[in-house]
Amino acid sequence: MKRLALLGTVLAVVVALAIVVPGYAAQPSRIPPLAKVHDKLTRPLTAGMVLTISGSGTAFNITDQSSQTTASIQLTVKVLRVSMGRALFTVTGGKLKVGSDTFTADGGRGILNFHTGRMLLKVHFKDSDNKPVHLVLFGKVNGKVPSKIDIGNGFSLNFLRPQSKLAGRWLLEFPGTTVTRTS
Image 1 (spheres, helix red, strand yellow):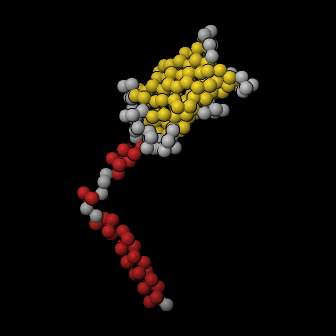
Image 2 (cartoon, rainbow, N blue to C red):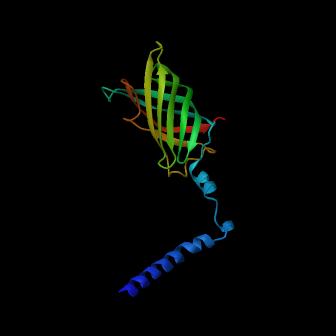
Image 3 (cartoon, rainbow, N blue to C red):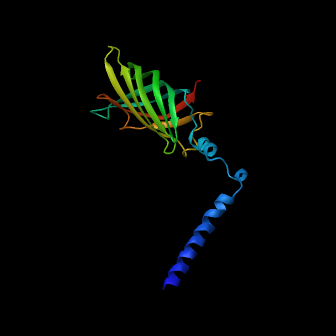
């Protein structure tokens, strides 16, 4: 019985070495650097980039969604930080127009997940009476992800309702919103 246990142990060690050793024996020139491959696939944006997000769509009254009007948005965001799989933004300016009302951006933050292609922006606006209004935009990148997130060509996303809203007033929908690099 002891011989059988010893034989089993020796075979387990031999099999483990047969699996592990070839990985260490590979020539370094044949293995691509993991950091470069990962950066290329998951970091289409870099810190410091300035992006313009613009689109037009429809605003639906939050209490009666059959009542709707036109809406447009123009935001400027700066990429604060890029980590593995996502980018964090700060909103530096912009305007939102809903019907005849115009709102001016007064800051905000956002995140883009490169793997899922989802973007979330929370923006602080001021209305014409200088009262604060909060906007939440939730969007999905059009097309296959992450291949369509290529800032060299810009990319398109859809801001969806009911997740996108001007708090207490309107549900927003901006299909085909474009994101382009300005600097």
